[in-house]
Length: 161
Image 1 (cartoon, rainbow, N blue to C red):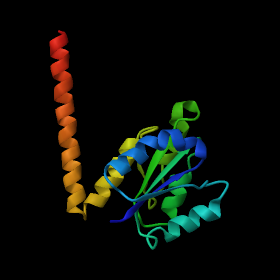
Image 2: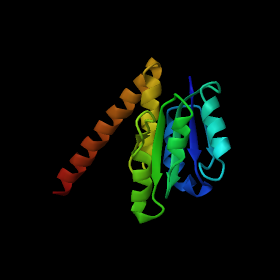
Image 3: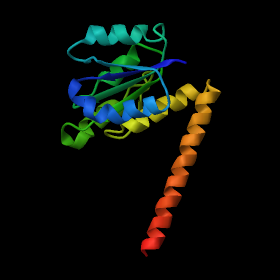
């Protein structure tokens, strides 16, 4: 199975990414996490993404706040799918959201909600599941459990009424 790279622009993004890491662990997905800054370590950003496919990664998740150029910089140097997580650090995260989602033609970045670490992990897992039936089955079970959880919550609500 391919690994997932989780790259954060700063170690201050770690608290948001806990949901990403726990979701990847829940699905037994191998991953690596690194702090790499698009602005402070641009050469390292380019080197990492240029070599990601050869290093057995299948998807890159990039989390950054403020100017949030990390996902785009990584995407510019790879043909792997890149998922951006805009981090709320200023302007309610709108600056990071717009910087992550507004990519020029030819440099696609899938973007989840501000602080949407769990969905980034799930999207990366869905991408890998295209070529992994076992992983696809795990996702089906996950969604089934979500349906069951909503039904339980509805039952509890009806009992309160």
